[in-house]
Length: 424
Image 1 (cartoon, rainbow, N blue to C red):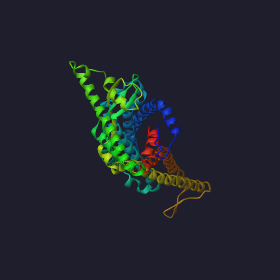
Image 2: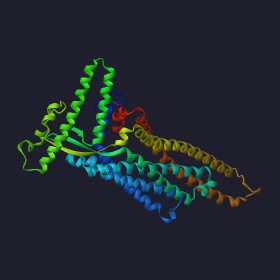
Image 3: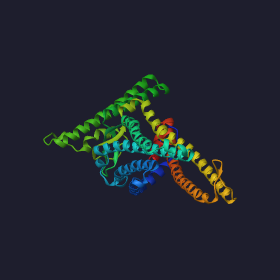
Image 4: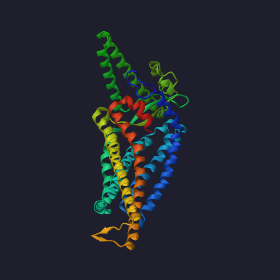
């Protein structure tokens, strides 16, 4: 990946090497994870929805399993196409219009369900903390009806918050790609008008910036800017002309010799004017990619707001909440352990508990204390298991939130050098 010398360097060649080497393994690893995760979440749903297993905690776990199951099922065709079969597919199938539509659906669907999963995990931590810290209020605050309403709200609110923002900032853009004899892309040029307009506006800004910083005379600047604009416009016009010629060749058989030339001959004038095309182009194709929408390109605030929603609302806030809840759960576990130790110590010393001002007889104590201690131990075991889940969640989600925030703060240089290399 070439790095613009005017941009700060955040990630060097080591990131590129890691991305290239891991990309070959990612498809197979993610496919195995998705298959195993699909089986595991299906079993979780079957077990947790049994009548004898119904409880507020298990209801949240069921909602969590449904979201994770949907994410993994949807990711399977994506990883097969984009990683496992990618090199075996012709370029037209790699970036076809139906696949671009699926990618747009994938980008929204996966993020929505992942957000649901995150906030259900936070809900699970809150419910567990109430059960441990406020057991007398547990039935009132965390009853089955309240839990079902909370789970439903998580699904509805996440869809309403995440979907519109992602839909507004993405669009399917059309590009022309020139391919060599091996099917490799030599050059790619935007065909969607809004992308062309945006690229031309960037060229205008670049020309104006150069005009204010260079020591060249004003006349030379005007000439240089005019030439650059003319060349860019000519390149785009010639490319569009070649597409028209190519399309005409596909549907017309009785034309003159000048219009029935091959694709290579059609784009020959462009090759002569472009020093970057050193490889002979044998054909050109139309491909479709998920791209920034016209609204996002022209409204930087919307783009940054979407990044902040992702990094702060979806990642950092849940992680901070889970960190606080995890600490409180650990403290509650230590307090429960201290309380059990005190009860055990009292029993060993032959001390009799006093209830309502009366001493409980010795023969009544063992059965009551045994049931109480066993219930507390079961509660602690459940809390430890959920605490381990929360800590694993923090390990995976916190770095993503930090990366998303840095992406917003540091801009495109960090996005291209680091974020896109690690986002997969």
